[in-house]
Image (cartoon, rainbow, N blue to C red; front, side, top):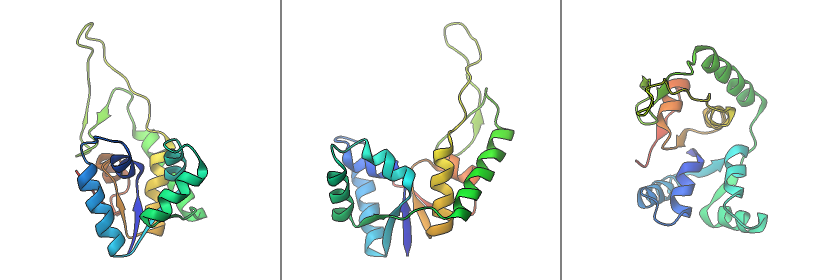
Length: 159
């Protein structure tokens, strides 16, 4: 079994005191025992910010049994197409829950103005499309974005 890993699962174990550290560690161990753990370029780049050197990052990946697997052209095309569809249907005054994916609006508690948001950036779509094309499942706690835009992708959460 090939398992893609999202950055949030890895940050859970790298940042001291994170709420999901134990459950994320168990999830990684379980999936490593059952196959391979892979990362896409986006996750690799996001992880790089947590390490003082490229050598330290590579050591972490080697020690945890993870490896970088570059995205193929099909995954990149899927990411672009799904992001474009998301952007077309997205409303700047709607937020979505990262757990269930439901949309809602918000107002400022002070002035009552509608709060708007920026669109989700392409990186989550690159992570999802990479997992869809090159893995059997994705470990992530960002359930909403993947449930809404990659419904055929199996998502496994530590939450």
